[in-house]
Amino acid sequence: MATINRINGLVSGFDTESLVKDLMKLEKTKTNKVLRDKQTVTWQKDAYKEMMSLFRGFQSDFLDVLKPGTNMRSKSAFAAFSATAKLDGADTTKVSVSTSSSSVSGTITIGSITLATKDTYTSSGEVKSLEGTAVDIAALNTEIAAGNNTIRVTVDGVTKSIDLAASYAAFRDADPGTTDLVTDLQSKLDAVFGSGKVSVGGTDGVNKLSLDSVGSVVTISTGDANVLGLMGFTSGDSNVLGTSQSLASAFQLAADTTIQINGKSIELKTTDSVQGMMQKINGSGAGVSLSYSTLKNGFTLTSGSEGFANNMTFDAAAQTFLENSLLLTGAGHTAGQDAQFTVNGVATTRSSNSVTVDGTTIQLKGETTTASDIVIQINPNTAPVKDNIVKFVNKYNELIEKVYGKLNEVRYRDYTPLVDEEKAEMSEDNIKLWEDKAKSGLIKGDSILSTMMTNLRNAFNETVSGAGITLSEMGITTSSNYKDNGKLIIDEGKLDAALSSKSAEIAEFFTKESDHAYGETGTSGTRYSENGLAARINDILNDNIRITRDSNGMKGLLVEKAGYEKASSDTTSDLAKKITALEDRYSILLEKMNDMEDRYYAKFTAMESALSKMNAQSSNLASMMGSSS
Image (cartoon, rainbow, N blue to C red; front, side):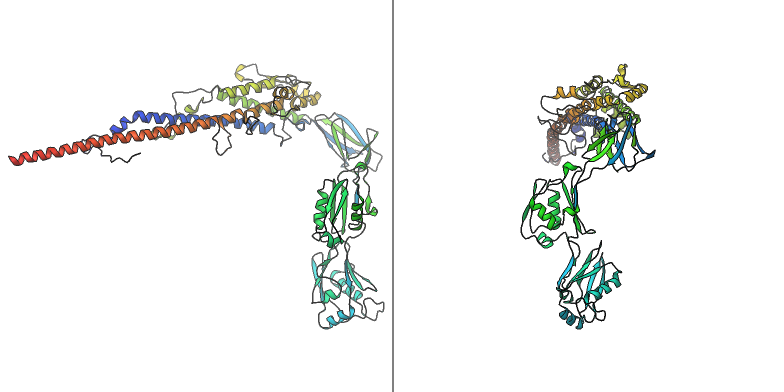
């Protein structure tokens, strides 16, 4: 836009601003129409997103796999039974019972339980001891005489300083009249940690000290210089294994090796840490678990599942490593066994501690020691299922009311969106009243929503093949009043009766699902006919509000139309493109209008300049005529 020197009627006396404004009214009408159209499309977009939000809320409440208690596609929402388990008339924890929609009312007895166990190896002894190298008694006595006589011992995090005696007659000597190292050290540890907490041992001949404690972690560290080394220890030595130690250090593994457990190869390197070794074995896919306990100072290797068939197998390299390094020998082996019990008096064997009887799953928790059977009573419990169905129907009816409210909303075509100049002359209340009418009916009769609602209505009215029950047989029918737009009516007495006698059929009616996946090319018709009600409804919703793209690169129909309500920006939907086009159109018209306004001002300015010159000339002429007279 050019810069124009605007002269406002200084000479002519014209109201130039008003004249230009009047001349621009037609152009202003054009730009305002574009602004009104843009606002209309924006409101229309918001109306579609409001509808999508309703559909997503319904989908979240009743079709979400993360909410099994209310997910009408899941049999968990139709588990219409409760169960009690009693032994000798009292509640028992020796079994846990889970009912399903396929459970059958009645009694199940479980007796003579021997639990299935996992194949387990435990270290036959402590895999690490705190034993030093040979003690040099003479050199130790010399160091003590020089005043260096303190070491530090830590037991379960508590550290005490131990002052050694002035001199030792021997490493260990039966003569009570002399002081030996083993006896003196034991006495002083007993004094600071309590008798029996730490046991001092010694190998005579080679004169090696050892410290041991059952169930406690003992660590020895430097006090005065050289003393600990002369006793045969290195600062930090402990009676338990450090899992950060390398296999070479912890088990003296001389070379890398590959072992096989349950047929899975596991490569162990000398540089692997103990923790790394356990992670390799546990993550190998062999279906085993290896752990280390500082309390027991040993390892435990367990099969992943119970039962004889899941007992572990090892190749020769694995057997050698496990026995020699981890002390996992036959002495610490308990083979896995199958569960043995009776069900309704029939002797039964299982590889796991679980058995399913007539749709009810029984988890064995403890062994029975009496001749009495555990009595499991399965009772109908239709209240939660009925509650889900009633809420589902009521929510669907609310959906119908709100969607058809928009589809049948009155369109006030005389009420167009207000522009800023119009709003400036109105109160806030009047603006709201006006805009409420301007927003009304913007998606009236929309074909996408109308088709979607028809499809949902058909889904409720059509039978589900093989379910063995229809919606009307459950007491759920469609209103005969056309003004209800297909709302459902529930006969609760009939629903109660159906839940009591045909709970499995009702679950099948809602939860049946086709083997064909949603979106699988060319199978939509087959999938629909094979699906139960909940899956059909979920597919219809996804066809319209899906935010992921199908094989053709398309999202749901409503999303393609108006975008996703939670997206921070939307430029690809049909209405978003329309808004962008209107914005571009507005920019073009605004630029043209500004150029035209500048041209009008330029002409008025030229006129004022011409009048100014003419007036000046007239003044000069009059002045000349006056002087001549």
